[in-house]
Amino acid sequence: MNYLDQIQRGVDYIEANLEQPISISAVARGAGLSQWHFQRIFKGLTGDTVKDYIRSRRLGKALEQLLNSDKKIIDIALEADFESQESFTRAFKSAFDTTPAEYRKAGKRRPFPQKVKFDQDYLEHINKRMNTVPEIYTQKEMHLVGLRTSFFGTDSEKNNIGEKLPPLWQQFIARLSEIKHTVGGTCYGVVRQIAENSDELEYFCAIEVTALTDIPDGMLAIEIPACAYARFAHNGAVNLIDNSINYIYSTWLPRSGRRHANTADLEFYGAGYNPSSDASVMHYAIPIN
Image (cartoon, rainbow, N blue to C red; front, side, top):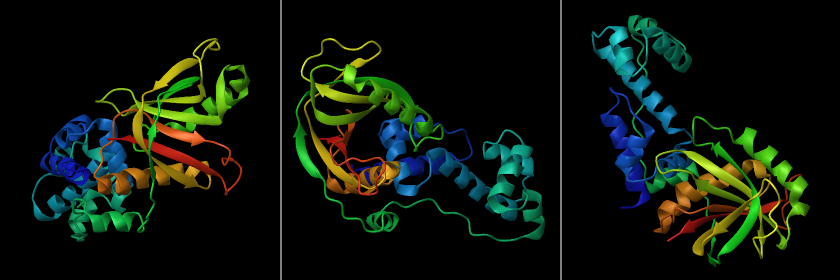
């Protein structure tokens, strides 16, 4: 089964369970993926988090029920997994600029949002027919030393990447000279999933070393096992890296016939990287098998 089929299975699970509580971990299990990988690929495909998509589908179904049934608004709200009619009304008004009662009374018909259909044409549309070709290479085993934090990425409704990663890099760069036995001048961002049933990630700012001795206080050793990787160039500002990652996960990976190897993603910050220049070049690599 390929990634497109698995994401579609997750969407089908959502559709079948709109009238009851839905956990993202259950959706991911239904798709046969870990929670983080499901959310990462789903966000890349749609631009929405899974939570936002579920909410929009429930509001879309509520539109249909308001027009085509005699159900009480409170019952529609509860079926859509809102805690109260008031919270449902707030969300409905925010989405459609009218209240459920006003919508039903006026009989205004709006298109009922349909569930997403994932196919190659859709992917090409989302990604504007990008044609990025990665370098496929075997990453040798590496030993790194650096600083660690945990965070939630842009594909999670708990996204706190802006709060966690820039301060970590500032702290790491300020202490880089403390690390002994370093290899070259390339620094790495290491991204790993913490648990299969969670979208929380761990992130390391690090540099390769030849020996794991004399590790500075507060820093950690990181081992990257030998693995095949697909490495993509990202041109431009680093704050736009999520656009490149979305392409990798939503377009290249489903088409490639390969699978994510469930080890660490790697960011490469080498000689071509300049955080203050639009001509900056860095690389992002995912492990594959």
